[in-house]
Image (tube, rainbow, N blue to C red; front, top):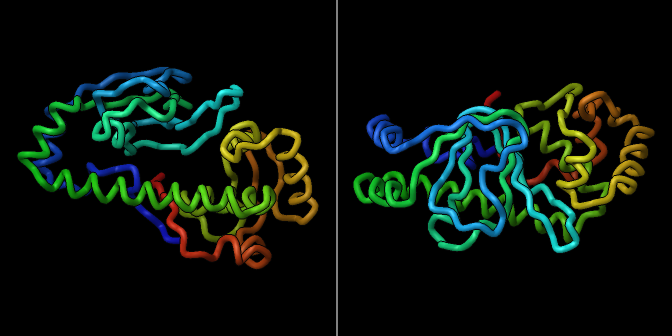
Length: 235
């Protein structure tokens, strides 16, 4: 796995004077759990940063089934591509916890980019890294079995939060994991029970416990010991 320390954040790497200019153009808002930050299909004239809390990025198909595309924690930004493409939002962004967001309008952002070219450079980095992550995600959905995708997803969740050995608790409900993998609850449960019999995981209150990252690497090295970018968050 290749750790990417800021695939959703172009702000922290900017010089202080540029961050101060962005701060001056920002407005802040507190949202309760379950609130929508952006809606699929609606135009957007702002970018938003998750200052605190966590959101999910998800898309709902014509059949009404929700697929979770990404989970973004504090520091990450959303609506970056829409602000430049002019296209409607391709996903819902929903608060999984109470969140505080900051918003910057498109006109203010473009004005800041003309004054501070460093912003454009960092935005290009973030958008390129996001494309790479989504590319690998789409390839995995095409070529891996459900069991392989579950193992890889759980391991990547641990990797994202800095865990490299021992047992790790993944605070992701089976419902949310199923949405992320675009699979039914029944199919997910069947595979999770198989992994429990292999001694790799344990269903726990509030999530799934990986009993040994070392054992997962030993048994599924072809899945997890790969040159694939993974977002890494600072807890």
